[in-house]
Image (cartoon, rainbow, N blue to C red; front, top):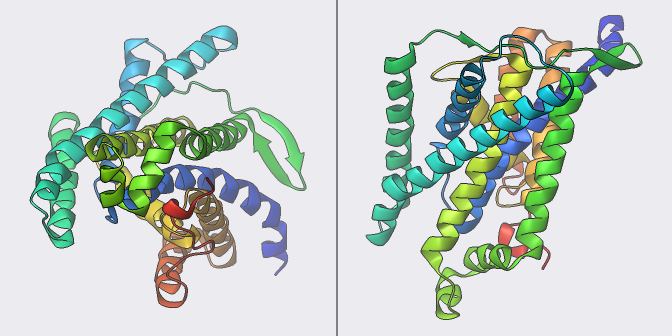
Length: 311
């Protein structure tokens, strides 16, 4: 018991940090589900591509150390833009190749699911053949200095970067969906695609925009993951993707703010589970949450769909 009490603050800090990454991943699942009522199981590879884009940008800039000052800000901005662009383009490509032809034929949800899984494995194997199957290290771009303490927990600069960046991106996305014309188009299609089309909304454009936004969020998550954990791999998105999906379900899939709540909640639940049992049980705890939520509250914590978001 004493050991658990001593781990409360470290668990909260660690859970909040990982939860921020889960929340960004959950946004991609939530956006696509809200509009298409489909789970994009290739989203994990969209994240993976973002980690490689960040790494390639660091190599192109020949960064082998943690730059400081304005140089550090410029490097951080460069890898963020690269990850967002790469993941966004791949997400749009997945929609164009794996979903749009099936949607034009009014194919079943099962066909869409199989197509997404096939695209997921295709992207994994392409990167495995080109870059191998071993973990690839990131150069450190941020000195992990301890900024302050909360209780007995250290709060490092990379933790603050992850949480603040994730919150900023989530706020921007929420404002975009709820306060812009394009965002109103997304919500209109989510509510009733047929009526939205009769009102002049370009359905294909809205769906493409939805995948692009989800990909951009995954790209930011990938950049933050690479900065925090400093590794990538051809299948790095598999577990993160499932946890992002779990976070989306936990918060209420189809609900943007639910993705935020679900991501942080899942991060805290798994870190406390690791403190109570052991670190080896973290994934078991996380996936048990998915099963329990689906069994007892499938609508999630907030249970509000994208189409019922605030106008």
